[in-house]
Image 1: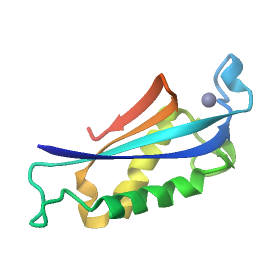
Image 2: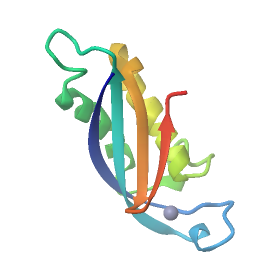
Image 3: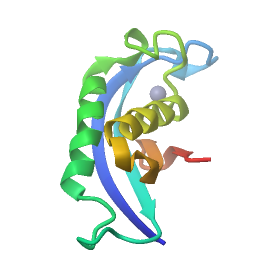
Image 4: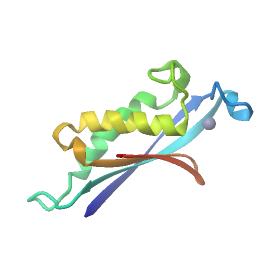
Length: 123
Ligand SMILES: [Zn+2]
């Protein structure tokens, strides 16, 4: 099995509406995003997928979130903008954006800090 990983980031504000504590208040994170794709065999060009294409799709999604108040944009106007929900959202968006190679997407990890990550993994 091969796994490739790209690392990107975005900055955004959020507040967790249902949280009782300081995370209920408006605050921000410099989110780090780790995205992996897996394949049992690379393509004939020797790659699981082109890093440039992988980064292009991912950064296109993250641009939609960058420097935004997440609670005001879909789907986080209706669901909590937790790291878990952000990871699942990014996963689904990248999967669609990668079209025929979307099935190779394996996981999206959203780091709120250097010590806290929520990861959505293809189940
Ligand atoms: Zn937070």
